[in-house]
Length: 214
Image (cartoon, rainbow, N blue to C red; front, top):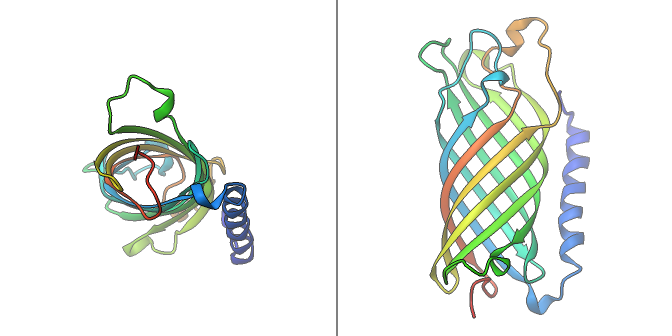
């Protein structure tokens, strides 16, 4: 699925409108703004490659950058950008591919619902729609394409200061566009059209208030 620039522009506007509209329901005095940055590895689904191409099981780097607004005690929205790089397995033709995504997500903090969690530990779920952009490098750079995705993940936070927490995140990014037929098959060399796992560790910093402060 190739997404034209006008369609992409309209979708990004809708995503931003979605995020800002939801946040407007909250009261400004309880808004809690956070920025997040995380680094880790990714695991691309082997079914996303054409025959003769396969990525390593685990690939580095994965980088996620996000801005989050908690407009209620347990509920918020997040806009985040993710970058992934994966490369060929030993038995595959050589290639490297960049996978970039942009997602608008709902955030639900389940910490207060789980009374057994130790003090300073938080658990946050997040999910929402987005766009994925695939760009092979080197000899296959013309085989880039894009598709819609749905992302779901879970973050485990550990408070290290009143406004700072370290966290681990496990996320699954699902391709919502279905299978892609390459004609000729060479258009699929080095590219990817399926689901992706992310495993990252990062820092979350509160800019206005903090979620885990008493």
